Amino acid sequence: MGAWQQLVIEGPSHEARGFAAGVLAEAGAPEGCAYWGEDLGLEHHTLRQRLATMLRGESHDELFVPEQFADAVVDALRRGGAAVGLVLAARRRVRSARFAFHADTPSRDARDRIRGTLVESLPTGAGLDDLAEEEVEDPGARGVELYTPAPEYRYRIRGTVSGDPGAVFATYRAARDIDFVHVDALHVETIPY
Image 1 (tube, helix red, strand yellow):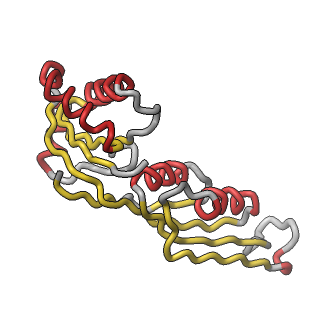
Image 2 (cartoon, helix red, strand yellow; image 1 turned 60 degrees about the horizontal axis):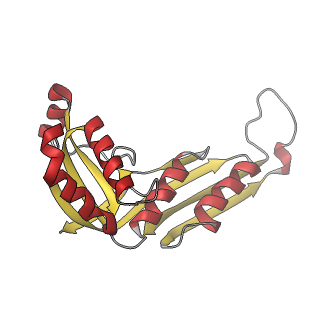
């Protein structure tokens, strides 16, 4: 989808989500094109932000949105955000996004799902770095016993997905839903607007 922006919205989270969803729908944004930092596993970084969230229900929500829809959200916040307790705290350009992952599974079906999502069908704009895969078959481990020390088959993979923020965000969400896959924190690099 090209260039992305990070909009940091201060105020009640439920209001921010509803407000942004309405503005994006009115602007003609495709459903699911925007991502909230909390949904991507991004956390509040400062003590002030954590205390405001706990004590007053306020938060600094990070909304990642394609650049062509950012102005609509910013303009709407400036026009009517204060009426519902929302303020634009920051606006940044997203330079890049990336996350590392690893998986270890005794299942060939899980291997196929993992490879399908993270190797063979990455969205346009996402790249795979530092890929390491290993398949081990141990015919000596066959059999059904109460205490089998090792599986007959084992698949291991690790790598880093990076590139276009929208493609990386979509892949991150998909990877979190695959059995046996462990994703590290999502890293988003921003620059001032």
